[in-house]
Length: 285
Image 1 (cartoon, rainbow, N blue to C red):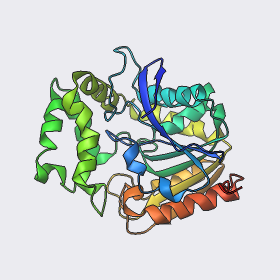
Image 2: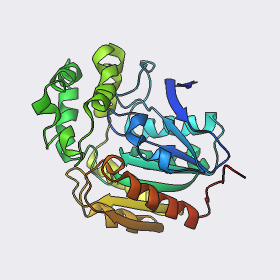
Image 3: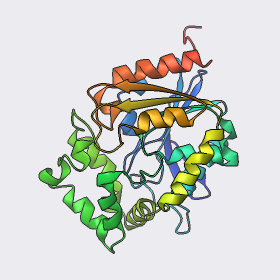
Image 4: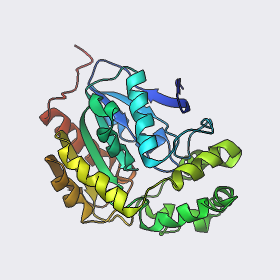
């Protein structure tokens, strides 16, 4: 897997290559690029770039002084895009919503459009049931305890935890991969805790959201009908927040729409991309 050294530390990524419009995918906590494994193969004609951000599922620790707050993680994403020389990027987020704040930073100038797929928004950082994860992460040894509990099937599949994020269920080998780095590395556990506890207070989050009203880019909001983490009303509210926002609801899905409804999501993304001027490139010429 390619790796690039950023100011925060090493970032692994996947890149399908090609001459098509560039899509950069964000992921959840503590997930990685495999969150999109069902969707990327359905996006022929696009260059899909998938960084593994330092949200707890990353394979190498960051520098001890790395800023892993919500805005810090957004800036890391922006630095990644700049260092790879990507431009006119479509940013696609699911679960983690902090990537939106990149559009409030100078590095956000390379983003041309955005798709927000069942993600954190407004003051929902972290989302309801995940607030317990933040509390655990504040306790010394808390992340290590979490990785041990995730080995217990009843805890792993609990509907009020990670088990509730997908109606189909995420395969055990994928969840093992997501939690593996924190299981093995003290440095990754440190980073996990920094990010999990890095959300600001409610007032700050809502103030940042208000600033997003000036982001005049095409924004697709894709919301799930059976999501225990992201409030149903946040979908239309997000679409209204952005001047060029548009809402699509997807049935029979929880938070991880890429897991539950990958074909429908790819269809909706492609329609949005074509409609906003990012048509796929025919590999045959």
